[in-house]
Amino acid sequence: MRNEALRQLNYLCYELGLIVNKRWWRWLTCWFGGGAGVIVSYRLDRCLYLVFGKSWSIVRLAFFPLFLFLRLISANHEIHFRAEIGQGLKILHPGLGLVISAYAIIGDHLTLTGGNCIGGRKGLKRGNLVLGNHVSLGANAVILGPVRIGDRTEIGAGAVVVHDFPGHGVLAGVPAKALRLNDQEGDL
Image: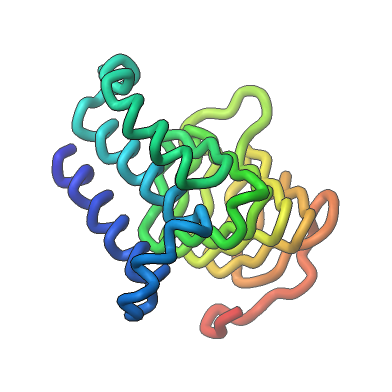
């Protein structure tokens, strides 16, 4: 578990590096947008959960001042510390709010545009809400599990995803339907 906790800190460094994009002065300004604060908040919460295990829910009270400060420099979000999110988390407009369920298992390079909810309906269990690598959600897009979304999927603004999708394409609408399927090799 300690290796997993260290991995969360590595992910955090990688994601902050993506935000500043090799421009030293962006380290001074990246905190004003809120996205960096949300990522720091989630990664630290997840890291400490992996260190303390089931007792984290109680020990977390000792870290209240830290998370209160992070809440002040970030945007409105509820990303549960039990949600597994791979490296490369990018949050573009966090002011619209974000919710990610504890049951979510998400691959690398998730892009959230704001107002997104990755949650579930009744009876959701761990492993029922899975997103692959390179998944992008447009503004106010919602994913309600149980559902599996494959790699390289773009979900349009305002879409509500309630069915599985194999990946390599674009989903849009309510309920979301495939608008375009891409070949396995191509990028979106």
